[in-house]
Amino acid sequence: MTSKNTICLWYDDTALEAAQFYARTFPDSAVGAVLRAPADYPAGKEGDVLTVEFTVMGIPCLGLNGGPEFKHHEAFSFQVATDDQAETDRLWNAIVGNGGQESACGWCKDKWGLSWQITPRTLMNAISDPDRAAARRAFEAMMPMTKIDIAAIEAARRG
Image 1 (cartoon, rainbow, N blue to C red):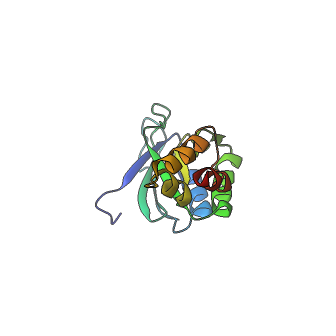
Image 2 (cartoon, rainbow, N blue to C red):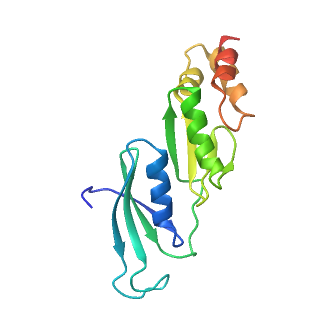
């Protein structure tokens, strides 16, 4: 591990599977070192995968197979800025279609319970528009959405 600050994500014996999925799904992502436990521990046995180093879009992470005690929570999420509807659809569908679930306003969870915000740059530009009426229309259009529809956001922004 070379980074001084790394996000540590807790898994119940699925850290390697999750890291491999993220590496296949997101650009600038990869699986690094896999550490196998040198002895038995509360969540596993000697030789089991204990930790997995990986990057998600350039962000260093460590997956820890710590057992079932702790679950992922919406208080932590990865926010992914997308450039167009095709990228938004691809990432959303990869997460939701691989055992994940939809949520509101561009949020979804992967099958391990980790939250993702698949956020088109168009949306962020629209809701920060200096024309507050345009920003409000775009924001109100977003509120009932699950996956963000860029064309609908742009139409609402225009009025």
